[in-house]
Structure formats: structure tokens, C-alpha cells
Image (cartoon, rainbow, N blue to C red; front, side, top):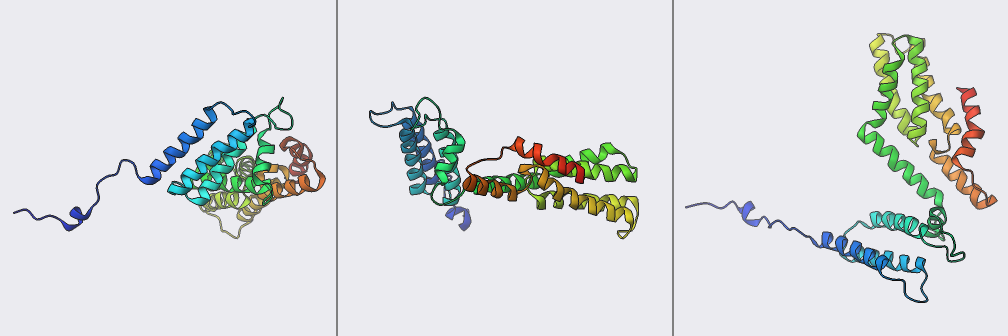
Length: 253
């Protein structure tokens, strides 16, 4: 006589398609179908895009295929890309553009700088979680040599390079400080020595200085640009910021 394990008997069968998976498939299919369908008379191309995004949103909301917070990010991204690739309603001879589309998606309840800050945080968290920031830092430090002066210079270079890649001061410093502590231990010097102090000061000050030098090095810069755009109706491009601020950062470094 065979004895059946109660847990095995109670275990449900493997479902190939759950309600959430099916809802996501239906939502994507509805989005693609409406975008592919010829634009009805009296409806603009941008209006058809919004109708397609609405169909996608209703499908994923009704089936809870995506978490509501995740769906908000996805819908915003769809609006920014699909509306940006659509003709401008006011000037049909040119595209609306992703910047204007993103502003339209956030109009009325938020500032576009919030989206840029969120993207910066996602990127910083991703690089930290995967260890990419540490790999870059260790690669640079391994090329500068073991002389104490070279190590200090290498820490400066690491701070500058990561400022271009990691838009978060906290993430950059939290990456570099453990590496510097390991270098101090490898040299066998005291943590209270001048060499150790120089490395720590260099790490933190380089991060702070290059927050100013690069537009995307800190979330605060994005918020400031958002205020400038709102108050002065003028934007500061990444290159404009670099041309104006990089000489100051280089001098301070």
C-alpha cells in the first residue's frame, strides 16, 4: 500500500498561463493591435496612441498583471516614447518629441525632474547590486600602481569616472570607501595615518566636487534644472552644464 504525502496531494498543478500572465499578454496585444489599426477619421495619431495605452492599462489593472506602482512607470514610459514618436497635434509636420511627451505625462501633478531623479536612483541601485561600480573602481586602481601617491591619484580618477556613470553621491561613496579601507589595510598603515586620511578626504571631496561638474552626477541637479525650466522657461543641456561647471570641478580637484 502506498502512502500519499499530504503536501504532494495538496500541491496544485503547474499553470502554464496564470490570470496575471494572460492579462499582460492581452494588454500588450491590445496595445499593438490599436497602434497597427488605421487611424479613424477625426482622431489624431496621438489620440490613437493614448487609446492604445489606455487599453493596455485597463487590461493590466483588471487582471493585476503588474503592480500598480510598476504599471505607473510602464505607462509613463509608453507615453513618453509612443507619444514622442507621434506627430505634434499643434504642428503635424513634426514629431512631438519625448521631452514634450514626458512633460505631458506628468503635467498637472508632478515635475519631469522627478522622473529623472527616479531613473537616477534605479541606475545607481542597479550598478550597486550588480557590483559594476566596484569592478570599475578596482580596474582603475589596479592600473595606477602601488605607490602611495599613485593610489591617491587613482582614487581621484575613480571618483571622476563614477560621477559620469552613477548619478548618486551616496552610491559612489559607499562603493569607494570599502575599497579604500582595504587598500589602507593592505599597506599596513594606521587608519589614523596621513595616508589613510588623505584617501578618505579624497574620496568624499571628489564625489562632492563632481556633483557640481556633471549635470547627471547628483539628483539635486535634476531638481534644480526642473525649477529653472519652470521659472525661466529655459533648459540647461548636459553639454551646457559640463562646459560651465567642469572647469570649476577640475580646478577644485
